[in-house]
Length: 257
Image (cartoon, rainbow, N blue to C red; front, top):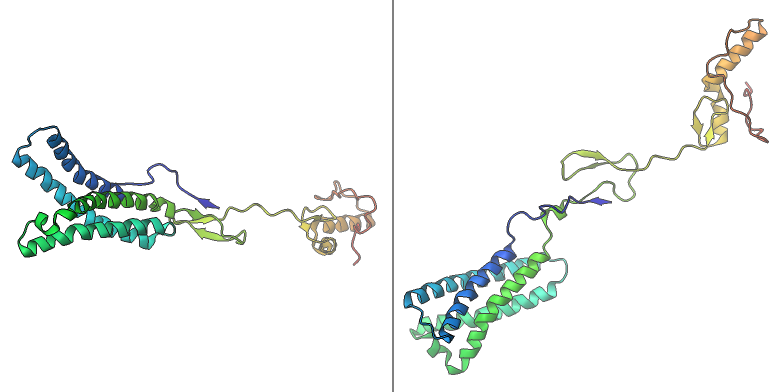
């Protein structure tokens, strides 16, 4: 049996997947705002346009570099469901390479990015710019959803399978030793024939206990006193004898000496 802590405050702090999702929103939101404003015929000042595109570019770099690294880590530690993460990570790397490589070539040739891409590649480059960020954000959120929390890893057993009733386990949550939770053992089936209260596993063991039974010893002392003519004022303590069961000839009153 495994004990888990309550589900309250299971995750403390913001997870990496949420951070990359926020960065993806920071990438897309300024560009969408500029596109919708241009479509509606609203002229955006050049200073505002530069600031918005600068924020979007920095967020793009954070998402593509940190997000792909986080996906690679999630793939390495995932115990199941790696296929979808590998597919997202591969597609994100392809889109990232398609975005960065032409920009580097344009820098080396001292040309504009539009001239390096050519008219035929404008659509492909633009689609990669949109998909790369969305793929990384989606993969980061999926990886974060499958990441076990620290409290899940602290679930601890109170008794290992096949453990003995007297086994002691270290409590990983409290750092203390806690006894294993086991049911009390069943009582032995055969009681003492002379009524001392002890129980035994076999009838032979119960009958052989007579030489050490305090009730039987008191009974013998009372018999010796009666033979000598002395009558005790009261019967010895513990001299009560349980009623003999019908047909039970294996329970003697006094064992042979």
